[in-house]
Length: 89
Image (cartoon, helix red, strand yellow):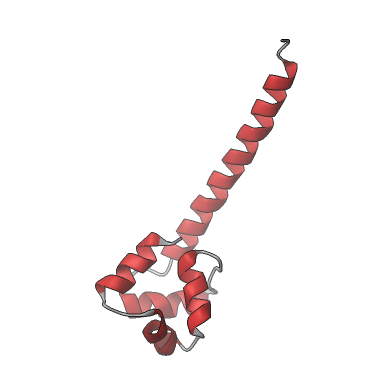
C-alpha cells in the first residue's frame, strides 16, 4: 500500500473516482496504483503528482525501496537456510 499516496489524496478530500476522472484513467486502475498492486507509467505518475501537488518521482523512489527490501529478504532467507543446514544438531 502506498500510504503516502492515500494520505495525500485524503488531505485533498478527493476520492478514487475524482482522481481517476482528473487523470483520465479507470477508477479501478487508480485504486490498484494506490494499493501498490500496479506501478503507474511516468506519464500517469506525473498526472497524479500534478493533481496532488507532490513530486512524481516518489513513485520511482518507493519502487526502488521496495525492490531493495525484497532483495534483502531473499538474501537473508538464502543465508539463513544455508547456515542452519550446515549447523550439526
